[in-house]
Length: 322
Image 1: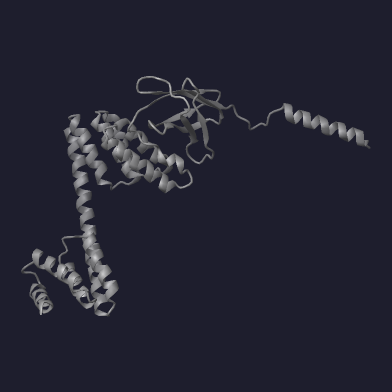
Image 2: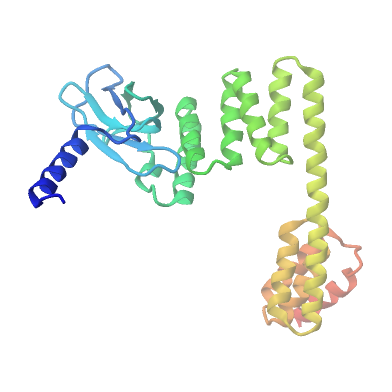
């Protein structure tokens, strides 16, 4: 039988071994370091540098630059990260980097006026808000003519919402404008891998192929885009007609509020379904809103002066004038 002192010695030995021998699952870590300067190459001190893991990994790390504009963050698990540098006066810049085990990812930031902060980094808990903020930043950068910054923002949006079709489309358009046709084609095809009937991506491919003089492929892509567009219009028109019929049923049953919503929905789906204007005018008249009724009936007569309900629409308008 072991004495109490023997058990105490074994416990101490176990603790020492636990401290000396690393866990079997421990992995080597990496680092991110770099330099932040302004457009003239002068170092920027006290710039805020944020390091955030992509994907499902948690955690966010913030450091500031020293007097020489340098920063470093160590102890990062291997993986992909976004790294942004920002000052209140000069805005921000964002990069996506890969940190390898025992490796150092080097980044050079150049901040300049007019760059916007990557707002999605400030809201890591809300993916939809984050993606929307990054997308809007991309749109603003694109309008300002900063194509590379726009691409980075769209890519940032994709990190939190990988199914963002418009992100891939805008990336493709940006690369196409810079004549990076291979990258543009890859972006458009990525969008199509998410949704095969995304007509805008086919139009984008048609433009890319035409610029490369791949005319047969351009024609095929344009034909597919046109086919999808026509198919989508037909589906919208069928939906609009069904919605109009539901509105008529509601109106006949005395449910005027739902009838108005259905007629407005039919017009939202297909503005060419002019009969919906007539029925909307009838419903608004019953609802006690002559101004809205007149507007809808006038629109119906303007689009279909000889239409099926034209005579009744004129009678309705004459009655309102009395």
